[in-house]
Length: 322
Image 1 (cartoon, rainbow, N blue to C red):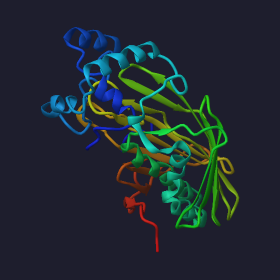
Image 2: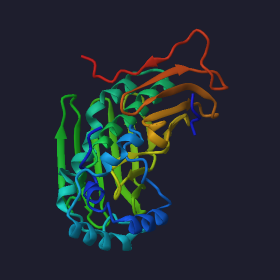
Image 3: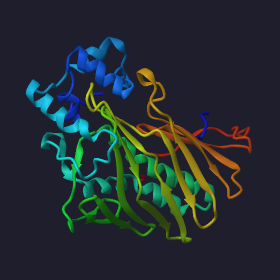
């Protein structure tokens, strides 16, 4: 148990990934020194040194395109690039951020199960699993378009969830969304801060997410972990979210703290999450573990965080029940 503390040749900032590599040995050394070699050697988080060179050579821009784009981007190192940078259209996917926000509703049945659950700790297990479910989409690394001010998007899914979102600020980008069905209401203000680091981009969520379970009025507050977009210049772009996700039951004081393991050299720890459900006295009650791109499991634990004798690790259902 950890402390609570593959083809993607295109995608979010993939144009930079494919267009700004191969500066020559001198430029390579100077940029590598500037970045502390961050993201230079770990090309494919699931690969090794034998395929690093091959992957680093895929999808390159022409020399003049590459050099032109690098001259534009290098002045933004250390800056928030949420609004100030004009990006080439080929790195975008044909959808807006409002549509992307709606992807969280794909596994909304987990919130239905949370609402139906009598056990307050299991409520948090199901609700946290729902919050983690959207991270599978981070493997699709194209950038969504920034909606125009006042643009809206509405969706009704097969589970009876109605979702509506509006762009309330264009620069800086900020969206507001609401979803509900017979079991829950979901309200989010989506706003991001970014920090461009040359070969990577840190993304910090600074909005607010609240879920209300209708059966007993429980209000849940979600704070997601930061996200890191790796290999903007060297190799294929890939996304990691190292850090803590915290979901708090504002009604009872119970909470979940899930730690997203950072991806290490050659993929060590990739996708792994571990954590606990705590009561209001911050005593562990249920341990949670798994991978955000596969499945999550849970098991009751003692006050030391160890599994209770006679219990077993159970997988949380990822498919909607018929």
